[in-house]
Amino acid sequence: MSETVAVTGAAGFIGRWVVAELLDRGHTVYGLDDFSNGSERNIEEFRDNEAFHINEGDVRSRSDISQLFEHGVDKCVHLAAEIDVQESLEDPEAHFESNVIGTQNVLEVCRRTNTRLGLVGTCMVYDMTDSKVGINETHPTKPASPYAGSKLAAEDLAEGYSHGYDLPITILRPFNTYGPYQKTGMAGGVVSIFTSRDIRGDALKIFGDGTQTRDLLYATDCARFIVEGTFSDETIGEVINAGTGTDVSINELAELIATDGTEITHVEHHHPQSEVQKLLCDPSKANEILDWEPEVTLEEGVSRLRKWLREREDMSG
Image (cartoon, rainbow, N blue to C red; front, top):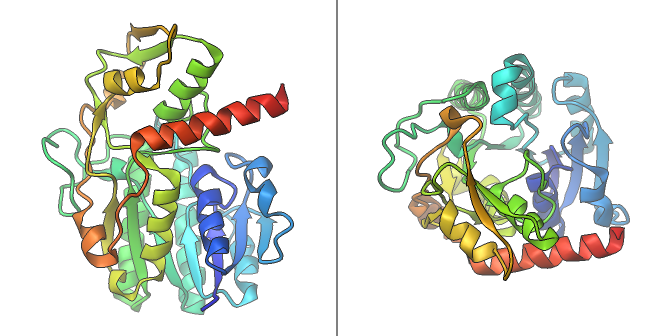
């Protein structure tokens, strides 16, 4: 059945994949983005799709969100957020305003319209100091930056609305997501940075000793998880993680991505206090409730990303 879905942060990296997934499933999408982090290029291919509409606006403005909901919205996926750990240490207020006040605004409009909400959180809310095994949803939280703190505060607010107003809400926590449309500069993810550097013939620079690990989730798998988690009745009131259940060290990742002639170097970490040594998801709850599991292997994901980056370079070159 076709539904109308509001997506905040629709022009961001994960946002555009969520939009693509929703359109593929035959839904109508009303997106909101202020284009501070998202980009016009990310949503270019949807421009001619009659089922896609984008509003330029800010989640910090309740009237911008209200406008989005004037179209008989059935469900909302809330992705808009400030997401840079280092920037949050330098400008915590911006993260508070977007991530906490922005979420409060979305919650209020959802409450007023009784709209089902999928709130996209982050694995960074978990206590990373003792994660020897895969992190499941009962793992203790311990935000290590204003970014993580603001995201956890947003989740707590949502839980308050869920219990206090019986608002149908699901909190979705994907682990490290990578793929096409992710930024390749320092604000990007390690897979995108390494792949981009390899294509250019630049050295892959590993911060620290490279033994730190990540659970890397491909963008389409992440988008499928977010859409299914938002649409399922079984997930209402739940917190659900998504990852592959396998972690890879940054050294192993560099070896996988580097082609002949590409140098791999180790450099001193520029902010070691925010480095997480082990990040591994236990995705069994998503599998049990949603029958969701990742479909794209790391090798396949890197191959797709490399192809996309090459095509983009050819077009701009």
